[in-house]
Image (cartoon, rainbow, N blue to C red; front, side):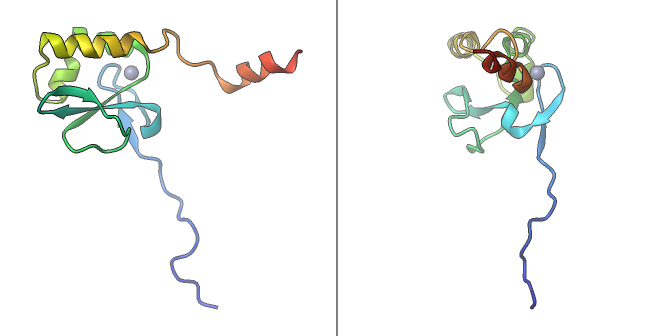
Length: 113
Ligand SMILES: [Zn+2]
């Protein structure tokens, strides 16, 4: 039997760099931002909306750093106007302050009951 193109190849998960803390993470763990004619937006698809993209952790600290230090604007080679900045800050405010708890911590809470 000749198999053709079957079997998943071991494929590396694409890694992206958070523009604030410069740590790499899996693409899915980061929030993609994209430069649009209307300003910098959170990529609503989380995939590859057209345009120049940059990534940030879903972590307020990374967002604060990226916005305050103009890192996001630089990464996207654009300028973020005051209104756009307010939008992004509002988005950042909706993010959890602490990183999400690890899975084993969650299990720990569930087990007793
Ligand atoms: Zn980060």
